[in-house]
Length: 153
Image 1 (cartoon, helix red, strand yellow):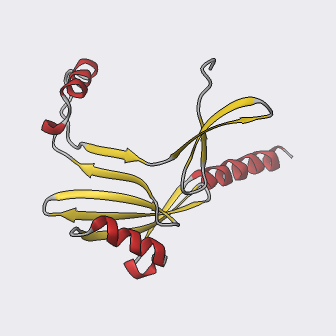
Image 2 (cartoon, one colour):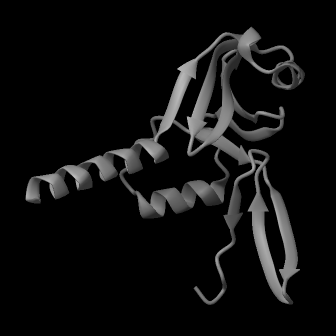
């Protein structure tokens, strides 16, 4: 019975980890849903598409497009409906705002910045009431809901 319990716990731990793992698969542009293809072409205009990935993460499907425009690398993550979820753009350290650089230098005085990205996340900010109680959360185009922390937390 002891070995059965250990095996069962191991199986549960493995299956739990796989449920929360992110799986990425390189695909061809024409394998994207038509609405995502249209959105990619609209948002990448003169950039060259380097890589297209289908990503499964926690039951959500999204697509990451790696592009380059001249020498600027940019990754755009799209939801299945073609909406942008996140935009990542490689930038030089000299592009950091002075206040951000000062904060980094204060917390990490010996840092040697090797990679820096400007990241924009897109979501819907929702405020409402449920049974008279106020609620506030983020809704993503993927269908994910991210609760806002309570002020009392």
